[in-house]
Image 1 (tube, rainbow over the protein chains, first blue to last red):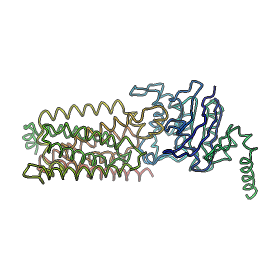
Image 2 (image 1 turned 120 degrees about the vertical axis):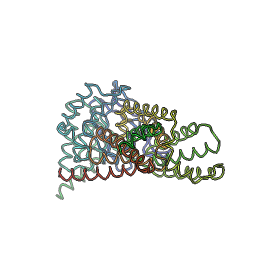
Image 3 (image 1 turned 90 degrees about the vertical axis):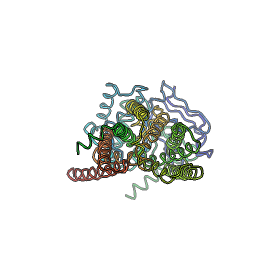
Image 4 (image 1 turned 60 degrees about the vertical axis):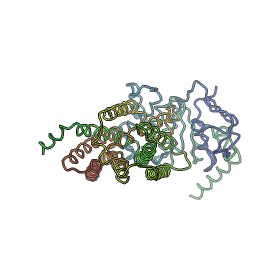
Length: 240
Length: 281
């Protein structure tokens, strides 16, 4: 059974539809990239999958024994976080909160989990540093480590490389690919970057008020939009 | 000077004032960090005006205990303001300003129309600036204050990690299965309790100072959530204690003396933070 199934979803705000007719399934271990222009409903779709927002119509169901408390989420940064006094360890540990229930403090296992995930993200040495003083790439690693504390199965990433320089962007993509390939974590990522999407993702969902394409990356490159993109990319490379 | 202090401490109302002042300073500083970070620095001021409005209504209605009306009204306003968060049509700061100014104006209007007191300006002034009320506390009020403080501290200790998660990233907390709205509601109720309590100490207009100065001062120097909260609690308690002692000795108004000390403390922390930042670079 699929880890996530969306059937005929319509999304929008205050009755206004942003996107409709979304039907797709995500199997365990896949790497789905959601692409599309600004305002095409990518972030709304992600918020709906996270149950932060109700769909206008349609259904979302999770499978493979995935509970709502087992989704890891890497959000875009908020204004509040820019000057928030918090150490890296405090933030990563807060990803374990969904394991606590009504218990007020973290257990030893949860602390160990946070340490392990900081190690995996290569930020163990930053544990005591203040979040707001880190570079953009380091901050994203902290938030990714927090997301890993919250999940063992499904990661949702909202533009994880926004605002990062090319080198750090490549590192971030490599890190996500490793999580997907080596740890078998299912990844759903929103991205502007179609080049990276076609390179890393196993499946692509291209939306623009309607779903323009859903399928594997190889098939995507054969469609008119995929081809147009490849042409554009090729042209850009020739120009260089 | 010590003799003079000892002399004053023989009177129970002075001891009450010190106990209540320190407890309120402690509670408001705990919540202040969250409020400042959530961009709700002005909620203390706004809610205290709501409490003032409610107090005016209670006075007009001749209720035997003002608290019965003030507490629920303030709690409801706090919940309405904080619960909605970032998804409202009227944004947080505008909503706070609207409710604050509206309640202040209506409260004054009501007192003006229906008050039986001969010294209306004096009444309003002492409510807003809390000039004497902390020195006229009864034993029952002191116990009420102790009880509410214990409740606030208990809630804070039990929910510390949840408060952190909800303050730092509400959407993440909600998405990963923490009941963010529920915890926001509890935070809102606790804040309303503290503010109604604090009105007795520093008066409506000066509550904001107790909420923001400790938080902002400790954020100059400390860089993790836990250390900022501990530091602001100590900062607040020390400033309140010094302020009350000075006001007893020098005969100055309690509320404004505490705030003056808070301002002094903030400047010291700000300088210390600047110096430490300079060394780090």
